[in-house]
Each structure stands twice: as structure tokens, then as C-alpha cells.
Length: 309
Image (cartoon, rainbow, N blue to C red; front, top):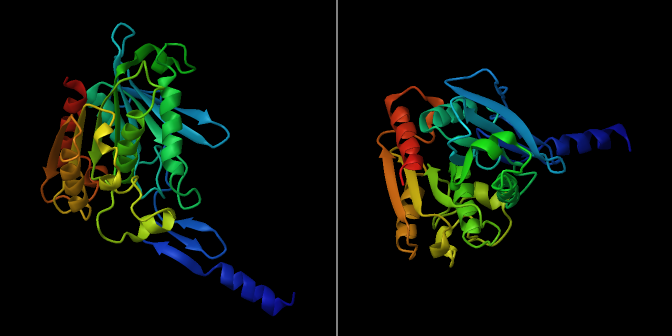
């Protein structure tokens, strides 16, 4: 190969195949360049707002892992609700270790007095849908294996109440949280685990309109039930008793959250669904401005939802 053809090949590989700003771009050579969501902060065995944290590997083969959170006041005499949290980022960026999500989980755990497992799933587009969902389900089954008190993680063995388990997430993570409850409603693997509810913060679902990102990261049929709950003929089997949905008044996904709320109410599902709007707020405002009054209100509502029967 002469130098001109080599240069041409190199130039071609650096051309942009797909770009979704401000998150990431994919070059024609297959390289994914993440523009946001790559920063990380470490866990802390020194209490932060009364909460300690640590990282665990769930699957060395796939790289699925999690950051665990435990209130320092936790006692083996009283087990606490278990929160399985799934981060957002369009399925393509972010992690539980980010400087946005770590303090958010510390705040949630401190306020609600729960044990939390914040899941690190493999990201799209290298790992297309449904891999993030499958990874999260694997993390959940790993956590659920502690319901007998004989799992590998002492925090879960000694402090988690598997009769009060919650799935929650924001944006794409809310999508995954919903789908985890759908899987839970159709499995017989969970005899010792009860999914009490799910919390969907500014959820990322499809509506009857094109979605450029979803179409790129998921090559399956247009109305995939993972993205379009209305297309799921089993929606009435959602495997939890209650659902809390947050929407932002100025969130570009607000209408999708409203649509999910109405779809679930009409599905024949027998649980209780509630929607809360943060007036005037944009998408995941609580992560970017956690000290504002409405972010505090969101945390308080989220916490009370997990502690009310």
C-alpha cells in the first residue's frame, strides 16, 4: 500500500459515522469518542453525610460491577429497603462512579435510610440494546442471591430487606428500571424477593415519533417494547405494587413521561401510579443543581416513597 492510499484509509477511519452531541460520536473506523460522562470519583469508607460506599465486581467476564452504599447507622437488628439504582446517559455515557451520580446516591441513601446498589452496565453503542438491560438484570440477580443471607457481600447479607426492593433510575436508567420490573413480573426466580416499587425520574421512552438515538443503538423492530411500553401486551404484569414518576416542566422528555403515566393507568395493571412535576425544571436538573430547593423536594419525595407501605 502506498502512502497516499494509507493516508486515505486513515482519513476515512477518522470520519464521523454518527454523532449525538453533547454525548458522543462514532468514527467510521469503529472508535467511540465520549464527549461527556467520563469523569469518576472514588468510593469512600469515610462517612459522607452518614453514608459509606465501596465498589464490587459482579461479573469479571463482562465487567458488570456496582457501587454499594450503606448508612453508617445501619444495624443488623433492622434490615433496610434495598434500592437498585440505574444511571442515565442515553444508554451511552455515564457510570455510578461519576461526580454527578455518586453524591446523588449518597443523598438518597442518607435521606431514605436504605441500602443501595448502583449498577455499572456496559454502554452502547459498542454494546447495543438490550445489553444494558441484560447487565442490570444480572446485577439484580446477584443482589437477590443475598436474600438467604449467604451471598458474597456482607452489606447485603446483614442489612438489606429483600421484602422491600426498589428499582429506580433517571432518563435511560428509568427505562431500564421499568424493564427490570417487567422481567420481575414474569420470572419465577424471585420467591424470596419482593419488588415493592419503581421510581422513574425523567424517563426515556419512545412515543409515536422518530428517535434518532434509539434507532442507532437498537437495530430491532421499530416498536420494541423495551422502548415503547404501549407495545408491550404484558404491561399489566408489571412486577411491582407502585410506581412514582418524576417529570420536569421544561424537560424535552416531559411528554414521554406523561405518556408512560397514561399508558400504565390504562393497561389493566393493578398497582398505584403517581406523577410529580418539577415546574420550570429541565432534564435531570437535580443532578446538575443538587442544592436547589426543587432538587431537595425530589429527594424527599423519592425517599418517602420507599419508606411508605
